[in-house]
Amino acid sequence: MNIVSLIQNEMHLEWRQMLKCVWALSIPAILAHVTYIIMEYIDAAMVGSLGAAASASIGLVGPLLWLTYGLCSATVQGFSVQVAQFIGAKNLQKSRDTFRQGLIFVVGFSLVLSGIGIWFSPDLPLFLGATPEIYQGAYEYFLVFMIGLPIIMLRILATSMLQSSGSMKSVSFFNSIMCVLDILFNFYFIFPTRYISVAGLQFWLPGAGYGVMGAAIGTITAEAVTAGILLYLSFMRANYLRQKAGMAWHVTQKCMVDAFKISTPIAAEQCILSGSHVAMMLMVAPLGTVAIAANSFAITAESLCYMPGMGIAIAAVTLVGQSIGARKPDFARGFAKFSVAVGMVTMGLLALLMYIVAPYVFAFLTPVAEVQEMGTEILRIALYAEGFFAIPIVGAGALRGARDTFYPSLINLASVWGIRIPLAYFLVSQNGIHGIWWAMCIELYVRALLFALRLYKQKWNNRGSME
Image (cartoon, rainbow, N blue to C red; front, side):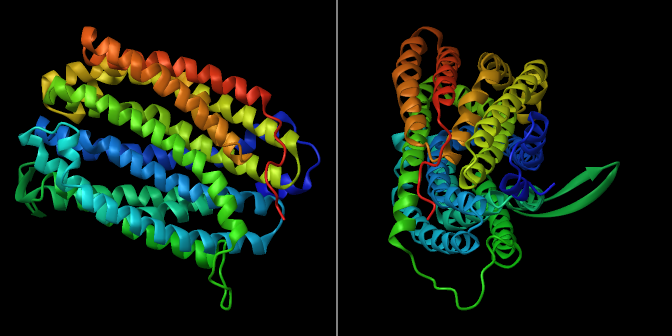
């Protein structure tokens, strides 16, 4: 099914066709995200085998890495949303020009952001309350990621551009390959050279033995291989993005201004959300190493439930953006509605499954019994709201496709900092880390309601010039 042609040429779509389009783009993206989460599970288990302190050192700087990743994704979306709408408008030249300009800006921005992160990396673990036993691991892990940030951002750019053009399958396949490479590289960089026993036979495995830092090195190496492949596909194979000799490598004011208008609210939204994670970590850190590790593992375990929603949100950006580019607001409204519904059902079912298997998940992630018990308890609290969490996740993607990025950011600001943080601050003194997760659960219900109202009132017309 050629979804681009369907949107451009059909005058009316039945709900079955819309649902089929949502699934056609969502499934590859979901598989890529699930594979990525499986990689995180295995990474966490590898590091968890080194002890609670090793897990806590990664968990401590995790919120800052999410903030950095969010800023990178926001920057890229300023260009990928434009590309999706130009494709919907059948403007091939504009989509290719926007891709080039996005590449120029992303390279420059990532180098600046990387330099800032490297400069502050020695002080950040101390700011977050690192104890001596976890400081070194946290510092080294964060430093390696900052060094590799330009590579990560190029991979995000190529991924987002290919997804905007509808090339979901190739993106999903190579991001899955990245997960396999990450596991292999982590085995080498984390553990020292050693012998392992399999079925009574001894095998020699080489290793660098870098510990926590090795987990970051392995991930960046896998990112580099994948970035190279996806950039090649974007430049040479994707019809709507393919570059040719003689094309001008420069930026235009209009493209940069449009990208700024789209990206700035999304970046603000990421700062709001990731900043709340930093604030939550400042509350968790005084509770001790076990609490930090349990919090980190619970976040990793929960991500298996909401990452499929992120994949569906990517499909929503593409479908809504192309529909608006084709001047078909009814299509945009229908795709938004069905995307949210698919997200709620998918995330709700996964939450139910995770609630049942949570003890086994934590037994896989860490051998520390205290961490297993505490992690299971706090994860189950968040799962009560997981199905409704799909509304802000997928709804935000649909709204971004319509270039409506300001109000989602405003909703996140009001909900997270007006409800979650104050409530967590109040409950942590009485209920410890459990109170923090109850605050998050309650806030997710409120945010879901606010996003549902915004989606209901959205006009789904062209919010930006496509000339």
